[in-house]
Length: 373
Image 1 (tube, helix red, strand yellow):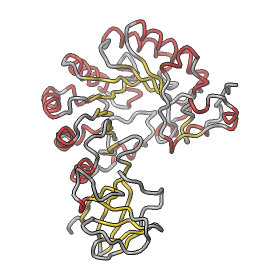
Image 2 (cartoon, helix red, strand yellow):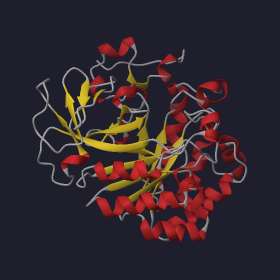
Image 3 (spheres, one colour):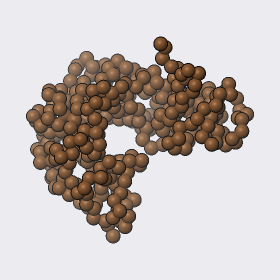
Image 4 (cartoon, one colour):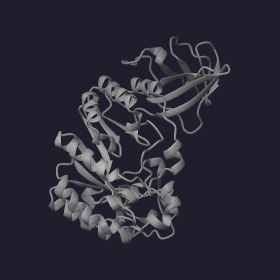
């Protein structure tokens, strides 16, 4: 049985897209009547419907209103058109999800074990269509998973396509970094990766025993550390990520000292709060630590890193749990659709500066806030 035909169209409100022909675009039409302009791949009508050039009507995704720059995936099967919204191309975070599989199974991961072991790979051809449908002037794109490097040759094809398509885009790749311990893979990666590429690599501890316990993958510390050694020796740009949990909180100052000694030339270290879903929620008694109990170890680690000349950023913390003198390091990092606040947050004078809580984390029973006047 042949695979159903798939294609990606870019939503537009104009017939003057400068980098795509009309047949690669879906025109947003204000008038609910039959569209008059010709040559577009689809026409998106008011009332949640659309029409193809041959007159075939289809229903639009219901999750939110479409805007110019959004991407639509069209699948044809059994003579029917199935349409879904892939991702936003021009607003907010531009992210391509490459695979659900991962060669680690971190105990605090927001995805579950089944997805990590059996998760599907996105179609490489579909991902390449998405890249071509994005504005080449975009300034940021994130590749994530699962573990993107597991795609191997297809991962390299995607990098080469990004390098060819975008004019000045910062590419952020979220990876466990283990693949970079292999010299051949690292060589091929450096040949095709865009010039402005930042690798976001987690380091859970300063030793193999704890790191491998958290990653649930024996040997992962050795591979990650060797990959980091090789990447940084070649001048590659690396963000080290520390996901703070009950498992490593007491060892974070030791990890900060380790980074200062061995990896002082990383671009920055990101210290991140948990997103309580997937493995993290399943093992919440093992990994969860309230923010007020976590903060003393985080602040000590930040001080050690700064004394070592390493730049630090803080992600996924409510602002009131971060001491004032560290607010310059604070980032509102949670995607808007995932952000939630406690009732007490409504009277806070700095709510507009606070990243809030993940929608899944806010259910934890021991959250506490100190609203600003």
